Image (tube, rainbow, N blue to C red; front, side):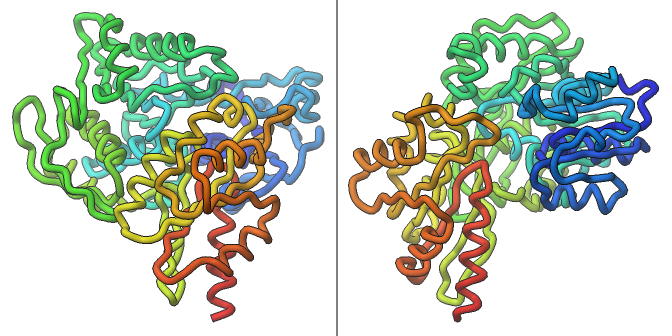
Length: 462
């Protein structure tokens, strides 16, 4: 795929997956260019490292590119995509490129509906602590490396897969970690059965001698376990909190922004570990990472030290600031009903009044999961809903932020509001927030800027 390619152009380079790939290829010595409708810190970092970055899309941006990379979010009528095909420049998808870079090495690949970024990040930090210096592809910005990817010198690649467009089926890992499995991306798969079949296929395409790591607490993955058929050289490690798994967490204590527990592996107590992440869902994420490390025979003390010193990830229960009156502002990527419930359950441990600002992500997800969204915000004391962040999708008639608001309000009753503009949300927060509140912005779009702007205004006014 990369043979003969000197100059590579990325259409939609600002996305977390695309920018991560571009960064690694830049470090490998390729000439990188890319374009996106909006520029961001990720594109700024690439430009500072030597990439040519363009705002907007135009045929001239391709320059002398010998390979073009496009994400599944790019429509067929994109002028750069049309120009590439006109000039007969090879075009590959982001998923194809990730699979190419992953399959040629020993790899640990994380798949699942939720928890992928945290689990992947923890695995990266553990392998780094064990001097394995892995190449990393992460679906978020890991504070420990100040970015979303890194070109390592070691033999291992650690990658977060993407099941949203089925491209994870192009990858054949040595170690696969399945965090959970739930209805999502049904706009692509069409049915629950098809997404289950995709995960079954992924589970069975390990490299020889590979290891499959599975969250046994997850009902759908537990059902999948009974169908998986591996070769004699491959093995399965299960983990969980509630189930009889190979790796289990005992004596769990949830404490605000951290969790303390004792992992037990096949009857052997490993010790105690404190993870600097909130909520039981992060206990599961860390267990998946520990299981991957144990599959590599990494010593427990190395694993423990790496987890306890974990620096966190942007937009994963990220504390972005506090006002003089002790109003805490947190930003989180949660955009699926299950993720929202888990995040708010963890937030409740902080013993503050919870003010949630939620930005729905994609029309299709909102429509398909409307009923589940209606029951996802019970832990919120005050809920503010915004218009849907389209993420490149065309609107679906009858599905909008107001529809979600009406459904949620029926379930919650009072203290549920809909605002059509950022300014109205900020005015409400300035007016109604009180001392020691927790304001938490939720969503996979650009909702995080609400929290940052609130802090900026509050500090200026005070």
